Image 1: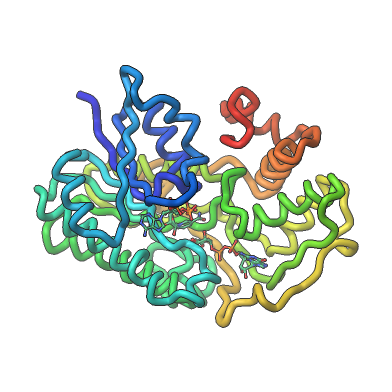
Image 2: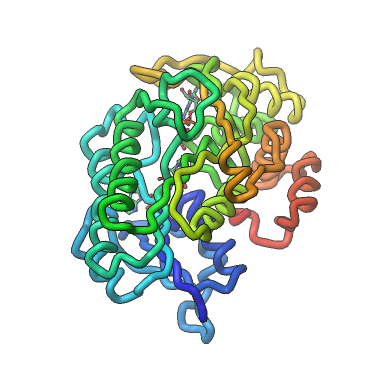
Length: 351
Ligand code: NAP
Ligand code: G4F
């Protein structure tokens, strides 16, 4: 029987790769999108060409993660086998400017969907997009047993959602799991996150349409992986018989400056000539060092990512060269092909 999945946050970076993966497994996929005055489905348009065609297996519904009534109605109507809750105000720096809204979307939104599932029949498997930001100032390496010390309104909201997920599992026996994902990036990463900001700037500098790149803290360290590998991990988590909390990461970390160096070296650019520091990008409290321990994910779902940070830098830079009308340098394209993602065959803004 065809399995049915519902994805919140389907228009985001992760949602767009997850829907592709689930469609490749012959799922019927439903996604919740926000009403917007301009199109916000750029990342999934290539999957949704003609909603009137026969054999359509992707369905989009207007809704908002903070709107319990709408979520409840949709869940009753769709009766999903699996729900992936990816919707969130996901930008850490922005969460300091909008702490209350971040709490409504990133924390209470999770309760809306858990409660809607419980009132439906409680049988649906539920995935919560938890984050390595929850570890905050806890010393690396961080694993499922590391104590959380969140350092931003975003991270605090994610800790709330983590524990609500655990509570619905314990209180109502629901198959509710947390994927605690460390940073994962791709050509579809939002432009205001640091990796994409760097690769996009490298291409624009090369093209001659940008001179300087303004950044904040270059010393913080992150464990950076490649998003398509992580969405497969989300799916694997929901295929387990019992719900779990699992860390997904690469097990290696690098500073923002190191990522910048990999990109600029690949693009043959000198960082000293183009980088400026703008304090506006500093955070009131920073997460200095994230490094995931994936022993449990290896043992439980056999998950272990292949793309390292240098490959990631090449993939993202090649894409941004192409996006800016430049010939890609080529190594990133080859890595994508080796991974079976033949990206040159699909529209360039959909990679
Ligand atoms: P993203 O690109 O920022 O996507 C966020 C998605 O949530 C978008 O589809 C957005 O819709 C939607 N959304 C935001 N507010 C909403 C609301 N009030 N109602 C309904 N939808 C709403 O984030 P991502 O990188 O794909 O991350 C996916 C999830 O994983 C997020 O929960 C994030 O916090 C979490 N996470 C991400 C990482 C990472 O490294 N990427 C690591 C750990 C955890 P619009 O397109 O309309 O804005
Ligand atoms: O790219 P970032 O904004 O990602 P951050 O804060 O690590 O959060 C991302 O990963 C989390 C998982 O750990 C997710 F939960 C979250 O939703 C999001 O996807 O910043 C990375 C680092 C930070 O230390 C930041 O201070 O880069 C530093 N940075 C330096 N200059 C900058 C900039 N970050 C941004 N966004 N913009 C800058 O100009």
